[in-house]
Length: 197
Image 1 (cartoon, one colour):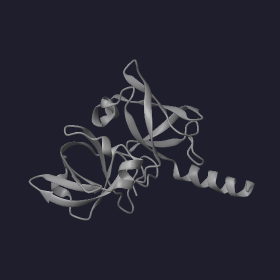
Image 2 (image 1 turned 180 degrees about the vertical axis):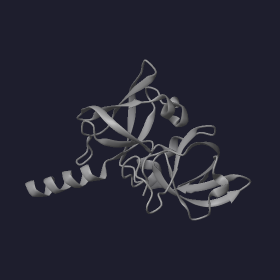
Image 3 (image 1 turned 90 degrees about the horizontal axis):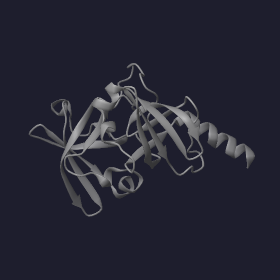
Image 4 (image 1 turned 90 degrees about the vertical axis):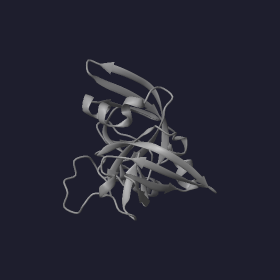
């Protein structure tokens, strides 16, 4: 489980295909603290560390992950938001994030607002996938508060710290991001759907 509080924006240093899998090698500030079998969220996707060498680490994304997320679009040099899994008893500074991306969304607008930034995203409003005003959503693994929630779109406001310390500074109109909708909202939507059936 994660909280959506990004620890570092890692740099992709190598990408290697092996059949339908993609092996992603990254450099980050805490690579020396990682161990094989550890879970780390990458742009909100929970992946397992499979190799450590020379201050770098490697994770593997399977075809299902590549189809549901933006990891298959990564290029060497790209920044990836990282968060290690929570420890029992830690503060929940963001919201409950499972590391299971629901779908991707596309940035359709980025505008500056006197030091902060607003980003608008459009997504496919599949059953159960929705945002609510002032609710939570994970965008590329970052826990954010929803504003201007509409069916199939929403906005988030980004403070300068988040803009500079995550890969949000690389997001512009046309950029594909990963979304994980609020787990509580998904359960409530499913319960209501079953009651109507």
